[in-house]
Length: 243
Length: 243
DNA sequence: ATTGACATATTGTCGGACAATATGTCAGCA
DNA sequence: TGCTGACATATTGTCCGACAATATGTCAAT
Image 1 (cartoon, rainbow over the protein chains, first blue to last red):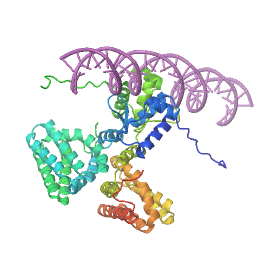
Image 2 (cartoon, each protein chain N blue to C red):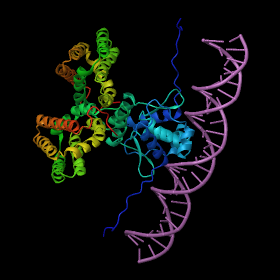
Image 3 (cartoon, protein in one colour):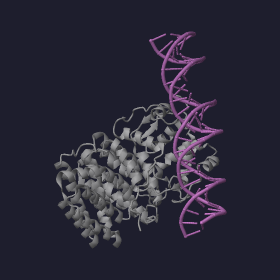
């Protein structure tokens, strides 16, 4: 016979979590702006009625998400979480889930062509100039594997930034981080400088011309090349990505 | 005259960060498996040669990313970061960046149709059954706004899970969280039960038939409906999303 | 096999302490 | 005036020791 009444497990949240949530709420609700200084640890401890140790643990909780940071070794600062912080945290999650290249590539096929398309609508002159500069440098370092990797990654980041879509930037941050070593391996194995340059050039032209379809299409081709690169280089397309 | 030599700013990383990184490395490198128990705080403190307070701060740093968790109120456990942890952390980043509905919707247009397409290839019988159950429940709660919201969100999650693509699941986690209130507002304002059901039905049929194109297409239509819903409901398509 | 009593281990929180470093002030000197 | 150095102050990073609350493990009694 089942018990006639059942009680919820009462959740006695530790103080450091409560404090952390209070601070987080104040931040995301806009009560504290990015760039604002937080009170000192001692002040916070007094305000919340807990010890400094507890406040410190609460702070660490938020620090990892990039919401809080320190300028120098000093005062706490409310920070706009950049792509790095998000990328690191999400990509380590993906690593633990043993995400394969294939899975990663599928997501990239959803996001990179989209970035190309959207960039056509919103790229400023300055951003187009940065892309042009990147192309020039690409031609120069065509045979320097390490440098080529750098400009290749930079190109994709520039396109993504040209969309001015922060949701997109944050969503693709982990891909960036995880593809990095793979691109490096492909470049070393196949020296695909020419193919990369051609694809980038077409994407750039499309963005300058505002031709959404073409940008999307060439970004797609570029990503298919990437896939073929992994397959041809025997890098294990269906294998988990390495950190 | 510029100085003849320049030195890098020497980075005196605090101990809690070092400890945190060491633990993180051990985890993502697979040295410690998910599900494993970590040594007690006192043990860790001894091993690293620091105080328990320092170890605790290091632990908090990882706890936020969902890498570490506690079973009960006891021992530390290495955890596979779920979509909730990632979703919370990334979505608060998006909130702080004042991401607009439009930006969010653009990313969703890249990921949701993709999810539909991929689900056609990998959905198991059990998952199809879950989708079917969801459809039945959708018909039942068509006029109950709150319940309708629940099944709507669940449907999208089920489709995403049916792809078996963890990278995709993690990438779309924040969208989920941020769209939630918006869907609710749309449903209350427009009672779009019929349209939702029709779209879901078509996506479901396509997945069962393994028809990738159709699944993608209907998911796209569904998302366009969502966009029109925000616009018609005057919910501010170009306004920042509210937490 | 279940219950209760008891010792033990571990976490959450507290309080105080100190060294290292950044900040602010002010006098001294070109 | 503008720069330098000395000094007091504030704040963080780290340490130590302590205690209550709570899980865990053991064992006897029923």
